[in-house]
Length: 313
Ligand SMILES: COc1cc(O)cc(Nc2ccc(C(=O)Nc3ccc4c(c3)C[NH2+]CC4)cc2)c1
Image (cartoon, protein in one colour):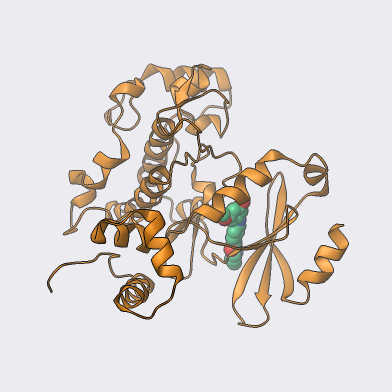
């Protein structure tokens, strides 16, 4: 019963004011009593819980498999009504853009590298987000972007090349193949949305906005604009996130491609271990060189340094 769960939560969290509200839920600021750390408490609306919305389960299952510096962390879930999430005091990226009217090219690039990092990471874990838009990016206390709301994400059983059918997300950011009701590849549709997001970051408005949805669809299908790589109407010719990582525009002013791996992935690639073996070895906490490498990588990440291992210094 929700009341018992709430009572239980109050043993571990002090709950404060509401800091966000959406269709299915509202978000309150809370403090984790034992650590004193601020967190975000997401409370599902009773109605949506009543329907036992699959999106809640989809989201919680996804969040438990995702750990990345640009993906909002799930800390605690009480089986579908409450989620304790990472606190993002910078608020929505959407509000940040509106406040600043539009971003400079350098600031856009700094944010966009983090956006591409999160998308590359979730795709590497076989997840497609399917609702990428500025409202789903929050800024934390260190100007890092955090991707939120995995309620309509997909982890196709057949792998990332598997075609999806369900049409979801905000039409202004939806790929042409999606709004045409065609079977589509989730990760390819995510790239389109990321391209629209880049446009909105740079210009301060959406490329295909129109109060009349049908006119918006016509604009989306027209396909005549000067950045053919991400908002490319033909999904087969659309750039992949792998090619975005070291795209010249993203590399301008930076010495390395976009880092997208998290510490575990970086270690498994470096040591040539499988992800399972890496997780098994780390879970032993032998305080050997493996533990040291992992903890020092975590420390690098927390200080905003590249999550990267090298053979010789
Ligand atoms: C996976 O992470 C998720 C998943 C999800 O379904 C929803 C969220 N939602 C969040 C929404 C907001 C915040 C948040 O921290 N918002 C926040 C915090 C402080 C302040 C504001 C917003 C805005 N005014 C200034 C102070 C965190 C998660 C995450």
